[in-house]
Image (cartoon, rainbow, N blue to C red):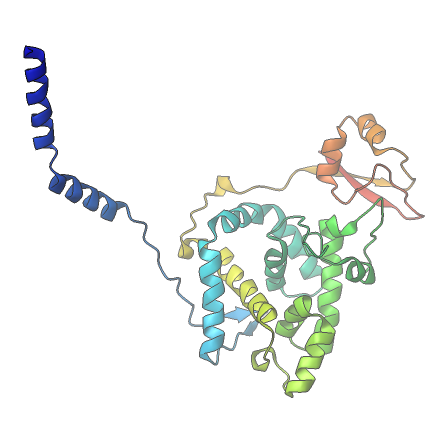
Amino acid sequence: MIRTILFFFLLLALVACDKPESRKTGNSEKQSDSRPKFQIPDLPDKIVFCDEPLIMNDHEAVERLHRELIINSYYHSSTIQILLRSKRYLPLIEEILKKNGVPDDMKYLCVAESALTNATSPAGAKGFWQFMPATGSEFGLRIDEDVDERLNIEKSTQAACNYMKTAHDKFKDWGLAAASYNMGMGGIENALREQKVKHYSDLYLNSETSRYVMRIVALKLILESPDDFGFEVNDNDYYLPVRTTEIEVMESIPDLIDWSRSKGITYKLLRSLNPWLIGRKLDVKGNSYKIKLPA
């Protein structure tokens, strides 16, 4: 009986100490202190794309760019990975663009297309530059059961340069060349003719293409100044280029698994370093190919 009475008084004491008002106040203050704060990213006063000022002459253009800047600023899982990959792949892309006389800013088109991965789209586009099979073949890429050069970063970047130079020769405007990468040169040509304008900033485009160019510009702004958009990346966080050496192959390889073992590496590592080798064999078809091996 005495134990029961003591337990009853102890329970009353606990209830009295744990008042609803104090619980509510404590939780409210804690929730208020820990609530995440989201900032609206600022737009620069002047934006240059491909060495040309981007004309933001109406509220609709400004808001389109702002939209893409907000989306990519807060799409952390993707944008952080792009930043980490940037020092592995962008220097190589920059070198090829420079060699071909294509503006450096076009590397951000590649970022917008694939987030610097050998991605495959639902429509069947592949690689860093997301070539469809017909367009890739048109611009010199081999695509068959053994080889898919859309997955070769050097050769696909060269093919992208060939495309962009062709588009720029046609339109005399890098913004239109970038837009045509999404819409096709024929689509841009028809839109210019129908709307009787000559420049990208004056052209009404479908929602996908109008977002596309602004996404490229937004990624340029973030990658050039990640700290301004809340991304803190230390130098030792970046993925660095993988050190490799190259072997020039001039004769067909009937079995790439046996060949890789003869070079002292696994087939898995061979495919990792050479993702364009999509079959079990390599028929050189009278050409020569450079295969990467670990340095």
